Image 1 (cartoon, one colour):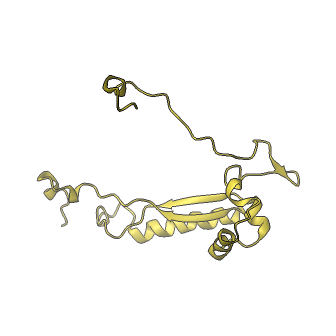
Image 2 (cartoon, helix red, strand yellow):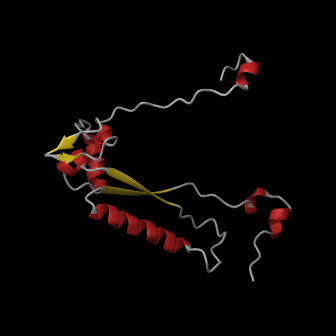
Image 3 (tube, helix red, strand yellow):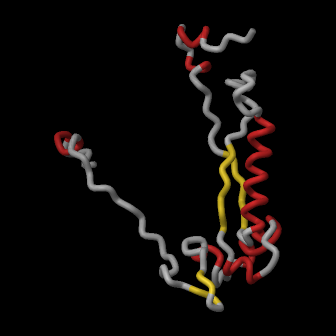
Length: 141
């Protein structure tokens, strides 16, 4: 986008992607394919002792796991500040959503991968937007 050329701003741009350093597609260790193609950039040949200490404290069991295990992120939409749909029997409660993410994390660990659970942004379904129609959106009986 060129701020000095307003007509050009309306033209679509070509998509741009970042090219992260990573292992080649056929990378292997002891005859087994390496699954940590991208996370290896952060975990392999790491010389930052502070970062290593943080990863060990967070649960990485050993040096070999840090170098060769894939790091898998498990997103969990869990936020107590959004009561929307928590009253409906067809929806999961907030605790059930958190427990589901923990179950996924355990399954990832059983596959000898490093599982990192994180929370996503909490989104409300417009109750807080202030519109008149939204004041009647959630009827609790």
